[in-house]
Amino acid sequence: MTEDNTDLKSRIDTLIQLMFDAQQIVIFTGAGISTDSGLPDFRGPDGVWTRKDKGLPPKDEGKDWSQSDPNIAHYAVYDLQELGKLSFLVSQNVDNLHLKSGIKFDKLAELHGNVARMRCIRCDTTFPKDSAMTSCDCGGSLKSSVVHFGDSLPMQDLQDSFMYARNSDLFIVIGSSLVVTPAANIPVEAYENQAKLVIINAGETPLDQIAHLRFSEQIGDVFPPAVEKLKAMMVN
Image (cartoon, rainbow, N blue to C red; front, side):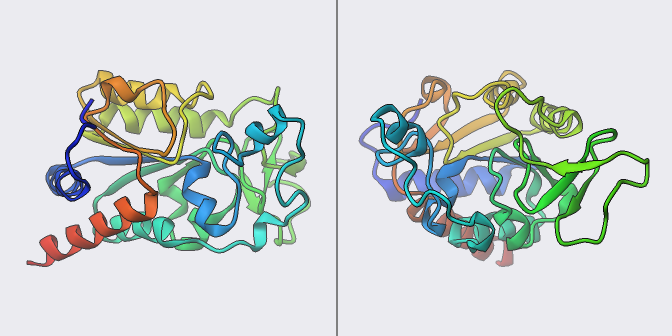
């Protein structure tokens, strides 16, 4: 693990160089990337599970997540895509903010579904909720794509995530505590296949000890400025 007394600028410079050198970057996002969009995380000081453990209801219970907007961290991931540096994006979030930011549908696996999309119960194809679709072309009926406790994860998304992780040379975790499996096994797959592992998350994760680079600072103070400097390097 590479988090010690090294100053933030030095670690950001290391991240920039890792991204510049990498050929296959996979990003993995959790709820922490969306907190600056006004959405709760799960295990932070005011997170959903933290409040539940205290016998408290979720903060802003009943809030319509589909009305939230992407923040600078979401747009930094989009910028990485536009630079041709993003191989694939794996997200545990259901808030639709990556698609809103401009991420291409075929570069994204939403392991826990999306509040703005429906899923065919027969073939797993998803459709926007605001489409006129009432059933899938395959004849299957549609239901919310959001994965609830006890539901299976979308198999194709899960398989794609492991495949891209296996072939990555740089795997960046942003805003995830990495405790929910099988999603949490995806960065392990990358690490075991020689990818550099970077973790940007305020709280501890089970993989901190194997991370090549670790940030506990705010995501907005780390990833967006790193991508901005990467853009400048690639232009020059």
